[in-house]
Image (cartoon, rainbow, N blue to C red; front, side):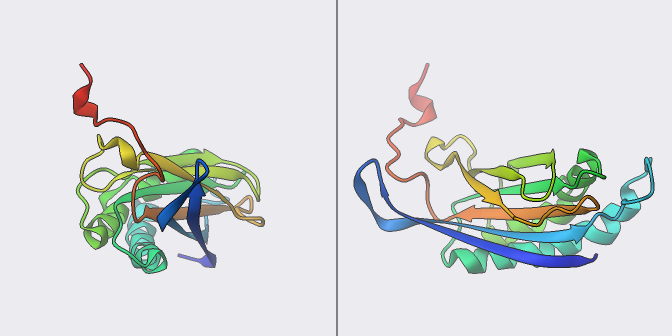
Length: 183
């Protein structure tokens, strides 16, 4: 796994809807900009060797880093794979949609739900939104949120941005009723 750089973003929301948010709502993102392991090979039928060589190491690198950046226990989480223009969306999906990758974050966050994800292909500087859901119950509406990310010089055409996001709480000032109240 060739990592060109790591990027950490911490968002702290102190006011929402004209009212103070106390304590501030915190969301952290940690992303690794890596060389696409399938770059320059044309269409690769069997992605398994690249998954085996990279996915677990990426999860082990990113999971503790995003929780450390958050500085609090995670209540919501999500993941991203943004592929450079010379790659396929499937290249990013192959790395993040495997237990080899995701279980590192689930274990570190003491989570049980599937990680919501965004996958897309784009040029350096492409904006992407990482969806987040509650770590133990994806039906808890207060934790359905997203965080916008942009890395000015990534991904290069032969790179993939792999990111994890964590929130210490639900949306600031959330007021939606629990899903079980609807019929």
